[in-house]
Every structure is written in C-alpha cells, then in structure tokens.
Image (spheres, rainbow, N blue to C red):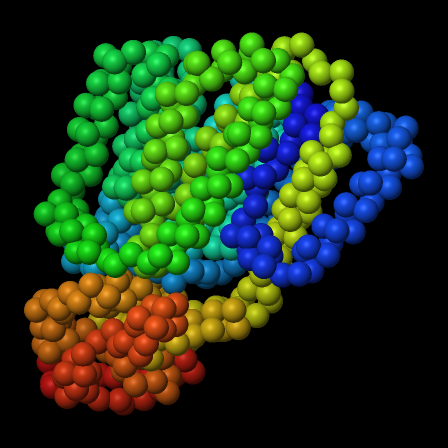
Length: 564
C-alpha cells in the first residue's frame, strides 16, 4: 500500500468543492487570490528551487497528511457538532420527514401526507423515536450514528488501497465534498442514508468474498432505493463492478433480494404502496428547468475531470499500467458516466437541486484513489511535478478552504441567531398546548415568507405539535410541489378543515391564514411569480370555519366556531 504525494492529491481535492465553492467562482476576489498564488508559485519554483523541492518532499510524509486530516477533520466535526447540538431544525424539509417518521410507527398512514420519499427515509428515525422517545435529541443521535457509519465505510474502502494516513486523508476529502451549503450530512433527512448506502455498495463491490459482497449490496440497494426510488442510478457503477468481480448469478441474486426487501416495509399498515406510487406519479410531472440542468452539467464536469486527470498522471508515469487499467475499468466507468448523465436529467426538475449528484463523489474519490495507487505501484517518475499541476492543486485547495470557511460562518450565524429563537418557540408552543389541553392542535400556513438566515421559522414547530398528538396536513414544501403540477386539493384535506377535525390551528402571528406564496415564486419569478399554495376558496372556507380567539408570542390561535 502506498501514500500519495501532494500533486497526486489534486484529483482528490477537486471533488471537494461544494456548491458554495462554485458560487465563489463567480466572484473576482477568488481570481485575484489565485493570481497572487500563481505569483508565489512561480517565485518559489524558480527563485528558491531547493525550498520548492523540500516542500514537495515534506508534503509526501505522513505527518503532513495527518496535519491536513486534522484541519479538515476538526472543521467537519466542529460544523457537525454545532448543527447537531442546535435545538431545532435547519431546513424546511426536516419537519416533513420527522412528521412522516413519527407517523410511520404510531398508527397514522404516512402517505396521507403529500410526500414522495420512500419508507426507509422515515423508518430509521421512527424506530429510534419509538424506542427512545420523540425528541429532537433522538433524531440528532440517528444522524450522528449514520455519519459514523459513513465515515467508517469510507475509511475501510480507502484502506484497501493506502496506508492509514492516506486513507484518512481520502476519507476526509470525500466528507468535505458532502459538506454542501445545505449541510445534508447533519440534517434529519433521507439524503444521509443514501450516502451511507452508496458507500456500502462500493464496499460490497470490491469485497473479496462473494457471500459478504452479496449481503452488503442487497442491504445498500434496498436502503438507497427505499429512501428515493431514483437512487437506483447511484448503484449502476458499483453493480457493474460487482458483476465483473462476482459474476451474473450473484448479481441476479442481489436484484431479487433487493426487490423483495424493498416491498417489505409496505407490510406495515402505516405505509400504503398504492398511495406511495400515486405520489411518485404526481411528482414525476414536475417541470424541468434548463437552469437546473446546466448547473448539473457543471457538477458532472467536477465529477469526471478528476478521474481523467488522475488517469493522465498514470499514463504519464507508466503507459502499460494505464492501458491495463482502462481495459479493466472502461465498462464500469462507462456505466457510471451514463448514470450521471441520466441523473443530470432527472435532477433538472424545478427544485430538485444539484445535491442529487453529490453521492457520485464517493465513486470519484475511489476511482482517483485507484489510479493513484496504481501510479505509485508502477515505475516512479523521475521528473518533478509541473508548475501548472501544482498551481491547479493550490487553487483548488484554496477554493476548498474558502468553501468550508464560508460554510462555517453560515453555521455559526445559524447557532447565534436562531438557537435562542428555537428555544423560545418551543416554550411558546408548550404554553399553547397547556392552555388547550385535551384539544387537537395543528400548525397551519401563513404567508410562508421567512428569511431563514435571520429568523427561525415558526413552521419548524410542526413536529412538536405532532409529538403531542396533533396532525400535519399541509406541509409548505410538499404543497408547493403539488401546486406546481396543478394537482387539485384532495377532498380529504377539505373535509379535514370543514369538519373541524383539529380543534385549534396555530398560524404564524400577524399573517393571513393559508395565504402562502410558493417557494418557487422566489426561485423562478419569471415562471411562478406570485403563485399561491392554496386557492382563495380554501382561505375563505378556513375563515368561515375557524375564528381568531387569541395570540401567543409566535402564533395567532384559531379555534373552531362550531361547538363540538
């Protein structure tokens, strides 16, 4: 096993650029910093050649690699701890996932909600709440445990190629890639389970034992597709590797086992397969955006370019090893490229986001690590790294640093501005629940416009009400999705309001009930300007049925007009 040098880190550093880093490319300050860095490179390379060679040699040593691991690892842990200790939620999708998770193990049909995630997006959180109690801390515990599993699997994968310092470095670089602006690694969502499943599938594909690889692959595919059905695209590459190593019979066994296990959660009475397929069909009609597609293409370039750069390194050092690697891996790499391009199209739906391509960076890291390992095992090159090579490596490292520092600033702002607000909101809801003990209290939509970078949205209190026995009928994110495809309101939802099934509704204070503007109006003002989530007739029906009776610090309280 070999360690890799600083210039060989270039293809590993390149994937570790988050969405925020891509935005940084648009700012001239980054180019100014890169220009200054280039001058430093040129000066040191030609004016101080011995210092240059000494620095390059030092960076190949384990202690320097461990220093990089320490810096990036501590940054990862610090960001993670800040978010995990935050006493609330940081993304509008989290309350919906938590609500569905609670319902999945508490006798309420999950797909009565408007939701197209698979059952394994909810069951891990739901089972944890069933065993240890429905609290935010339990949810954060599941997230922390999943992170630990993700890190362990990545380390085991890279340990098959490198000694442990380089394995740690490769692992932390892949983790840095996943630290996007949305912090999905530390949120109570299903994305983290997909990351774990992708890493597990790669470990299964490269395992020596066929039986162990088969079991791991079945578990990985079942978990990933159980979170999102489109996650199957992520497994095209590891399944092709598995087929090459273990043959068609075991691949068929993996397919059969995964399909059977994928249907198993629907044996629970809270998970209805027909309703799940209905919402999948509805959401499949979401329109696509050329803007989203072009953004996906940029990420695709960041996915594939490191592999090509690492292959060029290998070809420059040892032609025969490069040809051998190409013969052995062109089929899996072609499958991966095809699945990425397919995901570019699938993730071009409005609101989908470029984070759908992030799991592929696990494969990019592995392919680059393979090429580096093979390059070091061949005849070493006597030539020193080229200036352009080192310059690109430095610029990308600089971009990574700017990305992670910016992410750290976002998280610190979150904890500083919102921690006190989230606690105050929780206390306010507890006072309302105490005042209306014995009544079913539900959270409703207001105008739906909150600056989440400056204030903690009252809509994040939905899980707290659900844990106390309330319903959750209208999630703003889900409602925006079905409004975009012109799906009419369900009769069951209309009856829910008209018949006063919830005695009390909490509406964000000072806002008109259910006069919510779609989130896509802000994202795509040219296509969805001023689009409301609910028709005016529904607003009037709510006001005809409920009346404003009092207010708390964060909410206006509406109660049913009819005696029950």
